[in-house]
Image (tube, rainbow, N blue to C red; front, side, top):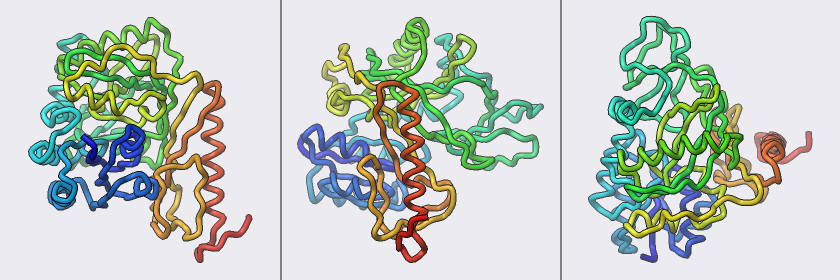
Length: 372
């Protein structure tokens, strides 16, 4: 396998990982960011990941490059049927569409956790009698998008469920699985950003360290050792959970490579591929760096157009094309930082975020930069 198809809402991370692994990535995504174009052998930008938008691009790559294998990233939560289409056309290196769909079937997912005696915040699948401390969550959500505090007069059009708000610190654990066994790659601390009253819990950033004790990490690891065979998870996955009052509570599994994979030195994409092909690749192998790495999404706080002559700093990723309009609340770019301790790396992210926002706002509507 020399050529690999990457399909995701944003394909940059997986495309860079594939290129670093010596493969030739073909990318289908929603943005065709500048750095995605730079590392892709070829790319196609699509309007959505719905099958009708995806199929022509996939057919084109199969015909032109005879590509046989694909890896999918984020964005299919609203289009699980598209994974079945991909699975019929190519060999998917990742979780089977049935496994992916089971994570979206929240009654089945949390029922399995009950059987395994794994805790999670209280939830219901019909409107609660009282609105106190309930969150309204979409059945098919990702990255915290669409989660909001529930009010008794809320209208619900999309499939949703209600979950008690659990105070605490958001975490994730990145792990590699082969359907039966697993290896923890690393425990991470995450944080959300509040973009609006109805977008209060959107994923903002992640750092590859956390203050969980070894005892708590062992508990989470034990949960994963039960969940992997129960759900038949393969490849790179991540588990989101809340830690509070000396206890952990599962939120969800992201059944595909997550943003945290880029915080580790190891060639995790090659190990993902080997695990999905059924080769022994989940034996322990240290993956963390001797310094702290953190990743953050920078969101626009108002509508703005990317200037034609804008020069992005080297530490920026997911770079929009000149002339692109970024609406308020949409991602502008991503940034990454490395430091010797967790506090310093998060502070560096804040500094870099402010630098990039100030630089963008230094351009007038004609794209001419003026120092303010």
